[in-house]
Amino acid sequence: MTADPERARRWIDDARRVVVLTGAGISTDSGIPDFRGPQGVWTKNPKAEKLSDIRYYMADPEVRRLAWQSRLEHPAWTARPNRGHAAIVELERRGKLHALVTQNIDELHQIAGNSRDRVIEVHGTVRQVQCMHCGWRGSMPETLDRVRAGEADPACRSCGGILKSATISFGQALVPEVIERALRAAAEAEVLLAVGSTLQVYPVAGMVPEAKAAGARVVIVNAEPTALDALADALLPGSISDILPRLCGAV
Ligand SMILES: [Zn+2]
Image (cartoon, rainbow, N blue to C red; front, side, top):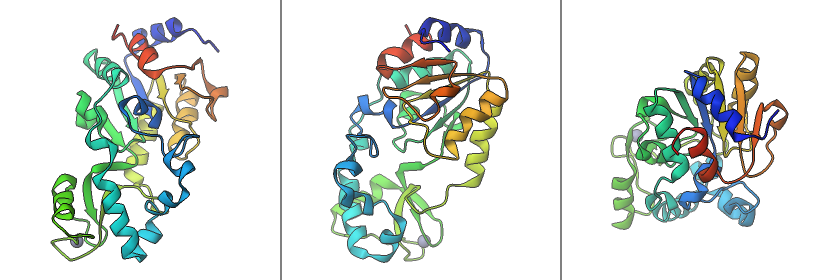
């Protein structure tokens, strides 16, 4: 195991299929707080977690009203991609990015310039809404306009059902096809680059042992220790915005 970013950079230079897994840590430099970390919104205000729990959301109109108010203020609306996001765009430009699996819901990878078909969003996106009854999907900005115009809990215009951001809330099942795609990509990787994730949440964290078992080099970039540091071939703590451009050949 190495802590030398230059060695990890050479593995990436030599690889044709790099799979990147990103978590909340890559978006904090864009001003999007980590909801679960030690300074996280949920850690400091456990009540906020209720708004993201599907059971309370479906049962209680007051929870939905508060959730819509909180969506109006979501930091994603003003966030811009940072150097970490730009570095992964460079990896794609160099033809090395096999897949980009993200636990984030902010779409900053796509806004930075990564191809939509390359990004696998395991927790969905806050930029769309979904009807919990008929499955209709639509635009979050348009739905937020309805909230601003006075609809405290806007209903689906197709069926009258409950609308929610197209994200995976607590208590809600992941989409099996999306998880399968992520794990398959991990098994095809020559280098698995895990960035800004504590690697505690399964099945997504399972990408790391999956890649390792298939012979990939595992590179972990995170400010704090992760649950899977023991599997790393390179362990690079520190600022993602500083380290990632070096690893991906963006500087
Ligand atoms: Zn509907």
